Amino acid sequence: MRRRPTAITAAEVAHVAVAVAEAPDDPSIYGVVADSVCSLGATACAVYLADRERRELLRVAATGLPHSWDAATERVRFDSDFPAARAARTGILQMDERAAFPRWLGASEGAYGIRSVVGHQLVARGRLVGALAWSVPIVPAFTGGDLAAIRSIAAIFATAIDNACTRTQLQQLRDEWTSVVTHELRQPLTVIATHTDLLRRLPLEAKVLSRLEHMRTSARNLGRMIEDLSRSSTLDTAHLVLDVRTLDLGAFLRGILERGGADRDGCEVRASIPPFLPDVRGDPGRLEQILGNLLSNAAKYGSRDAAIQLEAQVSDFEVRISVRNRGPGIDPDELPRVFDRFMRGRRATVGISGLGLGLFVAKGLAEAQGGRLEVESTPGETTTFSLVLPTVAEAQELPRLVAES
Image (cartoon, rainbow, N blue to C red):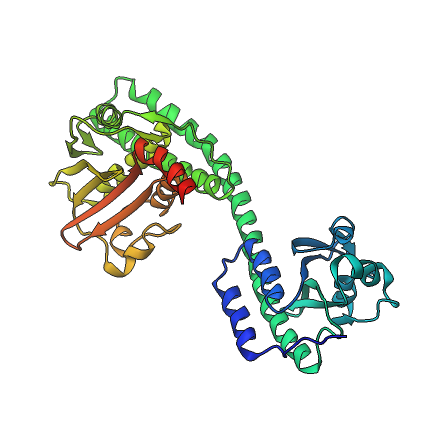
């Protein structure tokens, strides 16, 4: 019977730690864990999360599982004799004697060359978060020094999985909260906006009409915040629906300017749109949301006495639509975070309402359509946000280039 040629080295432990640390805090970490175990010599690996209420283990990732295990071990009870369940109860388990465990070890030896099965519980912050089970074609799978290394690796896995689970739970709570808040705010806001519009039609004094206009503007701003909250939740829950079509970009941009007038929130908009622009693929409603957000931000944070510049330029197989304003700008240390959720710069928090979601939503909408948002800013001078979209020719060329490569 063969042993593992060499013990698990400190370099292998470090390699696993780096792979896990570089993985995102989301469910993709489960696959990273399974692959990392296989890099240590395992022929198959299954990763389980603990469902303490049902007292079950739920398989969330697997690599190379025997067919007989696959169907039977998607969910296993804590009191099962399956290696992951036994390890969840006892800490660590190594099964080298197939006579003692014929169901899981002996039946798989011929077809898959499995000679040993190892299981290890995953514990973080003093509670069970899951367990691992993996197979090795040698007996014994690991010796004393290896088992100590495995304990260290399991602790790394447990922390990463616990972080991913916590992040998922927080996202679910945030989305539920957002849904409730936006729903509850819309109804009273509709009542306020409707009655304000009705009052504005009455023959009232100029002073009263001015206050009603202020109420109307405030209600509109609050409505934008509610929509930003709703859209930010939609981006994360993968419920975004796009109506993608081929667009005459020049006509599309001129239409936005016509609908918005020559000014945006009291600021003049000067456009430089070439007579001929290539077509792009996108959802016209979502693209108008993006550009509307950029124009509104330019008016909100720019100087009132300086016009907003809207430009469109073609470069290779891309079109760059830029919105530029003059004003206080964005501090250099804030630029990398300008598209983050709830990000509001120091210069933007004085006397200006908002939640810091507009650019986050705009970036998500752009990326969902194959584009991107970029920003450049010189404090005290100009700030430029650019929506970059691939042209139709580029969108059609990419699949062919990928196939040829």
